[in-house]
Image (cartoon, rainbow, N blue to C red; front, side, top):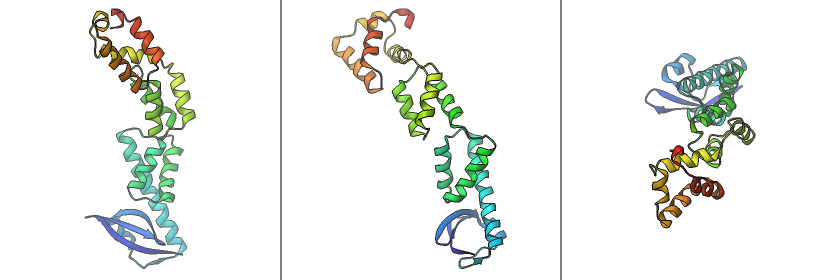
Length: 206
């Protein structure tokens, strides 16, 4: 037995349904009317199971609509489903669906991000960005290693944005060179790598 403890508007045409005192999912007013749900209703086991199965399908549909627009990490997608009003159990049903059909793959997602950022950010920054997306550290390490990441390429990329030639780099004042070094270190690059690249920078690098 399950009780509908609240039905409340969240937008003009969407209602949040709470079951047994916990917000459970959000339905359009049309779907709510189809299910004939009202605050205070007691649902028998058969109706409860059918309603939860339906809500799970709604979560799966919402997950698919999000993934059609762009890739998400598992943590990001779960967070999006919770933001859409699905509780932990029902959001989990949506996640299980996309997992079962291999629509969600953190390693593939991380590989795509790494491919897009390689040579433009530091390994440290790339690791941080993936951690912010909720990707597991083991997956991050494996994907970056597989990409044969080289921070020196990123340092050259940053220098090229500021200097048009090796001569221009070498003509920088000591103060400006130090400012460049500090900027690169703040972006996660190692001092020894920065020093090596700046000391051996040639026009071919541009």
